[in-house]
Every structure is written in structure tokens, then in C-alpha cells.
Image (cartoon, rainbow, N blue to C red; front, top):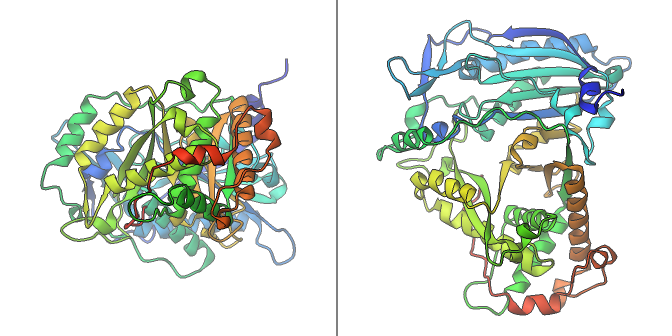
Length: 503
């Protein structure tokens, strides 16, 4: 009997070494404990975020050997951990308490660093096209037991032609802005480049006068811990890119669809345009009458918003080590969201923009105590929830360890969580790429919806003042009415101005 694909893939991975790398030189701090703020507590029961970076290695005269590269990665990791020493620590209950956690570091703590060999070529893995998640998941190490918050793995790919760097991080330790700050610092140390500014390690910067931490802890006590979900063996992982031209076309469609309506002219950011486009495609791709029928039954979209610049009484530095993200959430009617053309697109973009307006206030956070309750209500509604991981602002394609920019970056954990993995486009300035993990049949439907919608955008000519219709063979095959002359007549959904950057 032939082995299952994931079993076959697992036999190709060979762990060569597993070591604990401690900060070096030893940080000039004694044993240290950082209390979890309400931003951190929010993530306590969530599974770790798992990223993998793929790199091409060019063999030849003058090129560093694989052994040299791996040794340098370990040495530079110790140097980076000196600045980010809390990530070498452990999550634990604060002594004398039953529900208060802290990130505890003591000299001698370190991060597990695994070295492995993998019998797959980098060009088979660093693709946009759908690939088996099982082939990629092994390139990210598990978090060790005992409260570890960070684990790393360097894997030499077939023939030494490529290398992957995998990272597992507990979200309660820090958010994506901080974890990628750490990666940029490690990469700079490895490449001999100028290091970014050091992290700001000061949890007192997050003020909590209204006792939000207590409220979040009570909310957690009433919810079940999210188990470490086994990586699905039947899922695929693929990346879909919107170029800056595609994004501008989305903005033009949204603008024209709301033209002539009362109020200020509509405006949406590149991120709003991207989220709206992908959300609408995702809903339309569902092969379930209950998903896209049901009249006005809502489905929900949730994404993180960085609050560092909005904290009171004073903004928090960009380099703050910890979590400082809140949840933006909004629902939209499933049937309208799934409609092709301007209806689905404007419905989605309107909801995303509204989520930002609700989540962000001028110089302050609006109602963070409601995040948990609103998310819980969205989940219990049964209408479905689509979430987001990552951000174009993290510049993951600038993480260069000295052997070039990544050929591909994946957030592998989206296969567990069902989230969208968002990053800047590695191919074009201003573009955004979105990773998505689905079973094979669902992936084929999403591919069809995505490419049909891109083709429709390219056939639309907003500069003429009307949204033109061009025959769409794929859409026609699926029974889709792509005419916007009819669908736009009922649109009356202005997009609010976005006064604050997201993330």
C-alpha cells in the first residue's frame, strides 16, 4: 500500500541537531518578569503563529558553505536574543496567583533551535500555486512544553540549493509587529548589517485604569481553551496577489458605485480594497446554498488593528515588545457579499471600512472591553467568521540573513485557523499578496472566483463614468451574471473616509 502523502513527506525530513540558544552576551538584566497586559491576555488560549521563510542558496566559488550559514544563524540568533531576551523566557502563572500570567526570564533560558535536512527542492515549495500543507508544515518546529514562547528551525533543502527558516511564536508574548522586528534584528546580525532600533521592554506603557485585564481574564474563564489543532492533511496552501493596478481598479469601482450619493466622496485604502475583494471571492466560492442564501443573514470579517500610535495618555513606541493590537470586526449579508461584480465588492469594502471606523478613535481605543463579546457573538451566530494574520507593513520580504531576500514567505498556521495570510507583494511595489488554505475542491472554486473577478476588473473602464460589462466565459459557465449596469443601480453604500492607518 502506498503511503499517504503526509506520511511520505514526513520521512523526507531529517533532524540533524536540536540545541538551546541562549542570549549572548548575557543580557545585563537579572531574573525578570513581565506581566501580561490586557492586550497579551487576549491571546493566551490561542495556538502559536507559524511562519516559514524560503531562500535560494547559490553554490559556487566564494559562496558560503551550508555549515557556515547554519553556524552563523545560530551565532547571530544569540546576539538578537540579547536584545529580545524576554522571548527566551517562559509563560507562567505569577507566583501566588491562579489566573495572572507573566513572561518570566532568568539567565540561562534560551530558544530551541533545530537544524534539519529536507528532501524537497526549494522551487517545489516556494510557489504561489496550491501545495500540500503537509509538505510545508514540518519546516516549522513545535513549541516545547513548559511555557516556551519561541522556537526556530533552519532546514537545508534538497541539494543545498535552498534553505528555510521556520518560526513558531506564542501570540501572548508579542504581536506580529514585534515578532517581525525580532526577525529583522536577527537577519541584520547574520548579514552584518545595521541593526534596527532595539525593542522597548516596558509593560507599564500600557495603561489599564478601567481594569480591562480583569475583564479579559473573566471572559477567558468562561471560554474553552483552543486546543492545538492538528495540521489538516487534506488542505492546500496557495497565494493570490493583487497588483497595485488591481487595487486601484477596486478603488475605482467602489468610488463609481457610490457616485452621486449623499455625503462625502467614498474612499478606501489599499488594505480595505484587498480585504473586500478577497472576502467577497471567499464567500462566493462556498459550495453551499446555506452559505450564500438565507437572505440577510450575516457573516463576519475580523482583522487586527495596531494601536501603538493611539494609546493614551501617550502613544507607545513602534518598538514596544508585547501585544498592542485590537480587533476590528464587521458583518455583511451573505447573499449580497457573494454577488458578483460591484454589489459583492462594495458590500465587502463598506463593511471592512466600517470595522475600522468602529475600532479606531482619534487618539484612543474605542471599547476594547467589547472585543471579546463581539467576537464571541460573531462565532456563535453560525454565519461564519473570516480572520486575518500578518500585514504588508511587516516587510517580511526584507528579512535577509545575508544570502538574499526570501523567495517566499508563508504563515503556515492559517491552515489550522482558516485565516488569510497577508503580506506585501514580493513581485511588485504597492501590491499585496494573500495566502489561503483550503481543501482541494474549495481551492479550485476560490481560484475560479478570484481569476474571474480579476478578469472582470480588467474589463471594467471606470474612466468612462460607467462600469462596463464584457463577456466572461468562466463566469458565464458558472451561471454568473456579470452585468454591472443592473447591479449598480441599487447601490447606496458610501465608504467612510479612513483617517487612521491600520496595522
